[in-house]
Length: 151
Image (cartoon, rainbow, N blue to C red; front, top):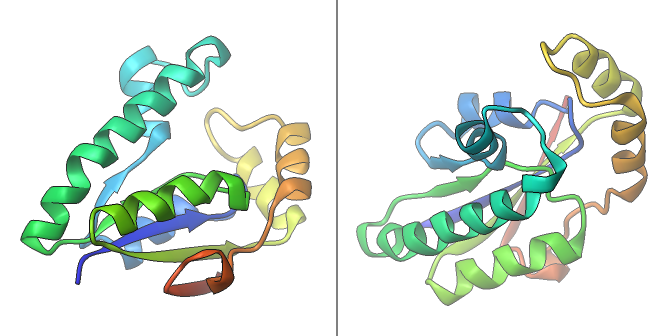
């Protein structure tokens, strides 16, 4: 059965590296990549709503095909809260895919250090705020499986 992998983790935790290294077989949908494609920038607050709309539209178009042709899809974003993950779980189930969380567990200091080495880092105060908002994923919220990867 096709799966929707939902990455979960703060900026700098290693989500995208893990997505590419361990889940390279899945088609990857990344709001970060879509943002760059649409705006040419790594972040532009006034366009975030549009990036979200495009990411959702891509998933809505892709998931029925994934189910029919039996291939996996991966959503590569922070997905920090249960509220943010709920629509992804519902979308997967509606289209007949198995929702699987991939939780990239990383301490704040390591994430901040990795983030600081990026060409365009996320401001440290944003990473800290996101770390405080992080809710660990659980089967109780609707995932069939939670894969925890320590970094």
